[in-house]
Length: 64
Image (cartoon, rainbow, N blue to C red; front, side, top):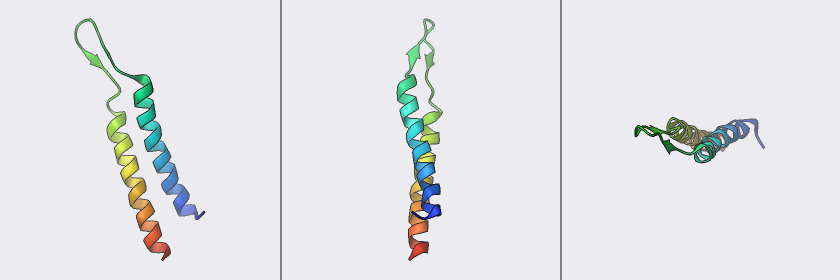
């Protein structure tokens, strides 16, 4: 596998890890009604997955 595709795979793996971590941590509502959840992991995971898809496409067209 080309080194460039490994970089895109790392970004994809990190994005998936963000989504899995969000599910494992979970969310809870405190007694005073405040919702505690690691919401920041969702946009970070989405950005990482989008970057990896763009890199896969870029490297595939570049390899052609």
